[in-house]
Length: 102
Image 1: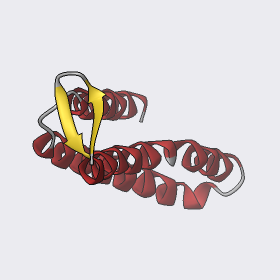
Image 2: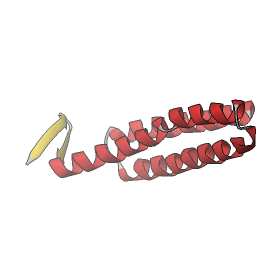
Image 3: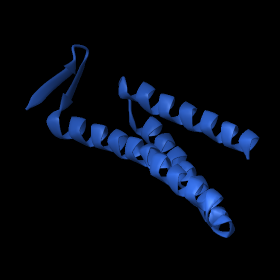
Image 4: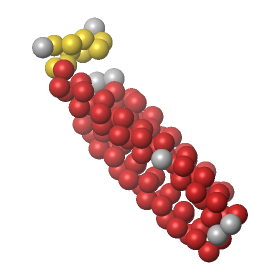
């Protein structure tokens, strides 16, 4: 069965689901930054000796998400590639902001 996402691109249904699943997983990784930041605030205010744990967890989440977005860029050949590129650029900007604030 062929579905149409774009008039110029035709994908099989399974390919479309797999590609959007990879992007959703990458976005869910990015969204984990929000509760992780709440945890970091708690550590900074109440348990300052554990703040290093937040820093390392944040670095790991960002690094894993960067590697995953690079994998997604290499695997896409349609308009979803631009979504993966925008995720990578956001993560690079977030990393630079974290370097200057830290």
